[in-house]
Length: 138
Length: 138
DNA sequence: CTTGAACCTCTAGTCACTAGAGCTTGTAGA
DNA sequence: TCTACAAGCTCTAGTGACTAGAGGTTCAAG
Ligand SMILES: [Zn+2]
Ligand SMILES: [Zn+2]
Ligand SMILES: [Zn+2]
Ligand SMILES: [Zn+2]
Image (cartoon, rainbow over all chains, first blue to last red; front, side):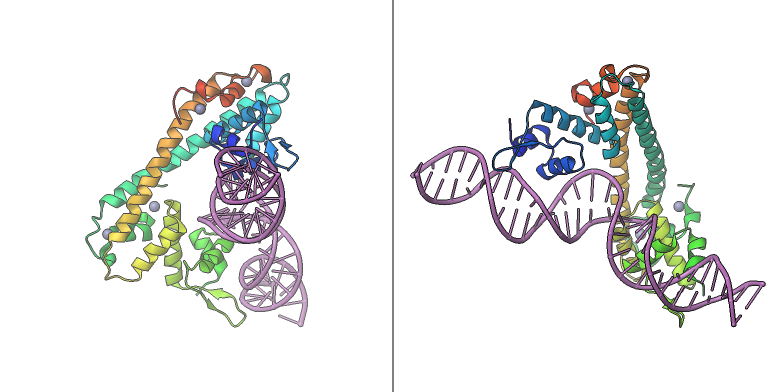
């Protein structure tokens, strides 16, 4: 059994974040000492590690909730889990696509001004004022 | 002179968002009719187009504030503008880098389970439970 | 002059935390 | 056993960039 601070150190999840996860129902309510302090065991550690890893991979709290629900029922079909993973992957790919367009446009814009001119003649400001100057949609 | 709804149509910025920008000081307080409704002119339209375009490129409200400040002083050096653009580009590149790592990992994980099994044996859940199964850091 | 779409302000909700106030508990050293 | 004080507790509010809704007012077409 260890304290919330110990759990925090082991999982690299900040203490207030652990309490937040508990409040959101991701983490079961921890056992308490007689003085009302939370105490965790191996199970709590594993669950928090799961949450941490899923968050690192960009899954939403809601998605993680569903995944945990599934984990708690070993006999259920895992279809929902793959669905969630695939939809998360699609999200990530969409974000990458959009960011690549932004990168192109921002690179182009940045290269057109060395920062030694005056605001009035600045290409950065002109480019922001007029999307027509952009080389493609974004 | 046109209404907030007109401005919204022309810029594709939603009405409550326009009011929000005004509240945040990005948009000067609009003139009002005797009945207290906002009325805009060409200047308002141009400024909102600028904001919209900058937001589309991912600049923060704070960054856009600085850019507008600069735009309002045509004789100032534009160094700050390029700085902001370059830092935004760096942000975008960092995000792409991170997302590409996630994409790799999520692709790998998704491919290891067809969703026809049972939760207990699901690779997706196993992979989330154990970062050691990941092929690299992310 | 009537109708109703569009406008107004204000408050609260979103997501995933993070910060701070003000209080209580656990634990290590004297 | 006593005493510090680090670490814990709860609760509220703030972050960014909006979005939704309530409840009321104004504009403009017919
Ligand atoms: Zn410039
Ligand atoms: Zn553009
Ligand atoms: Zn599976
Ligand atoms: Zn991993």
